[in-house]
Structure formats: C-alpha cells, structure tokens
Length: 351
Length: 135
Ligand code: SF4
Ligand code: SF4
Image (cartoon, rainbow over all chains, first blue to last red):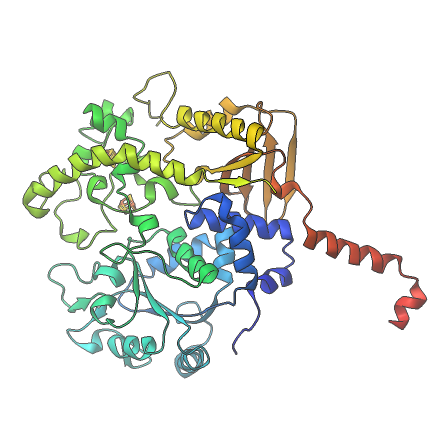
C-alpha cells in the first residue's frame, strides 16, 4: 500500500529527536557534496518529503552492488536514507517470491505512476532472452515494462551502466547496458564494481530532498562524484609529481607509500570518488591499502589490458590517452582541490 | 605500513591550507559575526593527516557528547570559537567530521521541536491523576 507519511513523520515515529534529525541532515549535505550551510534547507525539504517508491531490478549481476549498499546501510546515517525510501520490489531482499513478488511490482507501478524510481543492477542479455529470466519474464521485457511509467532509472554498478563483466569480450550473452534500451527518460549511471554505497544513497537523497536528479557528465554519471579522477584527489599525488614510483609490491617505494602508477594504477584516467568518500564507512580506499586503482568505474575496464601493466603500455587509445590524461591531471589537480575546498567552506550568517 | 609524506617532517598536504581557512573564518566570526563550517569528508587526507590536524587544533575548554542516532563528540579546540565535531553512527563508526567556526554549534542548542515535546511530557506528568483520567 502507498505510504503517505513524510520523511519527518517516519523519523519521528522511529523516535529520532530534532538534534538527531539535524545530524542526519548534516550527513545528507556531506553525501550530496553540499556545503554545511545548506543543512537548514535540507532539513525543511526532508521534513516534508514523501518517501519515493523504488523498484529494484537485478539482471545479469553478481549481487555485489546490493551487497555494497546493504552491508553499509543499517545502522549508519546513510542507512536511514535507504530506509526512508519505500523499497517495493527487490527480488533478492524481499520475502515474497514468484507471483506475489510480481504482484507487488505491478501494484507499486500502478500506485506511483510517473513518480517511482527504477534501480537496476546487472546488464541485459539480448543474445537470447532465455539467458536470464525472473518469474519466466526475460530481463529485457521486465525492464521495458517496469520503466514505462517511471520518473527515472538509476543504473547501479558497471554492469547496468556499461555492460560490465557480462559485456566483456567476447560478450557471450550479448549483454547491453540499461541506457542502450531506455532512451526516453533520464538514466543516471552509478558505475563501479561495486559502486560506492554512499554514491547510491546520495542520488536517492538528492531525489528525496530536492525532487531532482543530479547534474550528469557525458557518461551519465553524477558530476559531484565522478567529476574528478582518482589521481586528481590522490594523497600519493606529490610522489607522482616527484617521479617517485613503487616498481614492485614489496620494494622500498611500496613500503614508503610512493605512487603506484608503474604498478598499473588507473587513477589518472578513472573518474570516481574513492579518494575522498572512501570505502567501509570512510576507512580507506584501495590505493591507501597499497593497491593500484583498477579503473572499475570506466566503460570497458575489463578489456583494457592487464591490471598490473602501467597504463602507458595498456591498450587505451593507442597509448596517447595517457600522456594527455597525465599532463592535464597535473595541472587540474591542485586547482580542483582548492576549488573544492572553497566550495566546502561556504559561510552562514549567524541569526 | 605507514606512508611517509613527500613534504618530510614539516607541515603536511592539507593541514596548512585548512588552518589558514580556519584563521580567516575566525576573523569573520569576530568582525562580521559570520559562522563557517568545513566538511572534512570531501578532502583528500592521506593516512594520519586528519589525526594530525586534530592534534594541531588541540583540546580546549569545552567537551560535549550528544547521543542521537549514535554518539557525536563536540569539543572546542584550543582556539576559542573553533569547534571539532565528529558524528558517529550507532555502531560507533565515524559518519562525518566537521570544523565549525562559531560561538556555539547549532547542534548543541536545544531545538524548538524537542523543547515542545519535553514541555508536553512535563505537562502530562504534572496533570492531577483525576484530570488525566477525565481527558
Ligand atoms: S597514479 Fe595512482 S597512486 Fe599515483 S598519484 Fe595517481 S592515483 Fe595516486
Ligand atoms: S580505486 Fe579505482 S578500482 Fe578501486 S573502487 Fe575506486 S575506481 Fe574502482
């Protein structure tokens, strides 16, 4: 049944105090990369926001994207954002199955016509519809039927966004990304293998708070999270500038935390927020653990050559892309960091 | 494995720029009564850098703990008007870190909605039993 309660009412029913709510709004501002000065606006918008209905479709996937989100959700603050949507269909998480589950999907579509969000993880096989079915319905049919009256579609993970592993050479199932099939409505791509859970909840929070989808780049990714490369924001960057590189995983350079470029780091050509948002509740990110970035949020990252070959020798644009990316990265990095800092430090007039 | 920083033992990557920003914000607080909040979560800190920033700001006169959706630690630094805020979730994991340059952080002030709820509760408590049974 359609939940008519506002988010403010839902939180109040959970016994969340006003201070708790403000804390929640601060976390939301952080998630959306908005300055803390926006917290009062977020609070008043969220208080009266209605819980959006979400239908989550899982196609050719490994469930890693759902794991990424659910492992991090309860009981974090971001988890509350996830709790504050009305997840009306998710065949991995819901108790109902078969006809009852499909009836729930149809009911959610009917009751929230034009207003519900469709989240998709996994790619869609076009080679033979029988490669992947749910309740006897092929993935392509289920996608087309479900998005018909949706407000927007969010492709969660590199498989839904770009085809991912199923779409890697030789692509035996004819896997395609969601936006190759859905052309007449907004599709937000949240790539990553898996995507950063914070990024998923941030997009939901933005929709919830402002009723809007984020500003997107040319690959349909939110600019707030995919606007800069890992390299732009990497704390090992000063070593890169000085030409100090680890040559093997156990040499002196590796021990001293030098740049991982020569060990295959794709940071210079990978747009994602790992270096700032980080993983596991902000604990760290792969480079901080001594492992190069694999470039998992870029299209076709599985087919770009060996993960441990420097990108100058990997098969990316015949090798010239790197030179450009590295040179531009060096110039952009410092300015981007300064701009971002300015953005974070917006001021509020005291009342 | 601990990573050494290319700037050696001196000031590290983000710390000096942030301290500079704090200094300008303090000046604005004093002259224009303008508050500033810096969200530390989107800055690219290397291992140990955030702890070093915390250490440089030090511990001042006031420490407070808020218990709402997990703990929050709020304390003034050795620079009056500069506050270190750390929000944790119910598992004790850090959910956000901020430096606020203000007289009193907003989250410490009692909020009207909570004051109202408390007032109602107190009212009910003081209602004579007979009256309560009537209503
Ligand atoms: S190449 Fe990789 S490790 Fe080196 S600075 Fe760039 S992102 Fe960091
Ligand atoms: S560091 Fe690179 S490979 Fe690792 S999760 Fe982030 S974008 Fe993906």
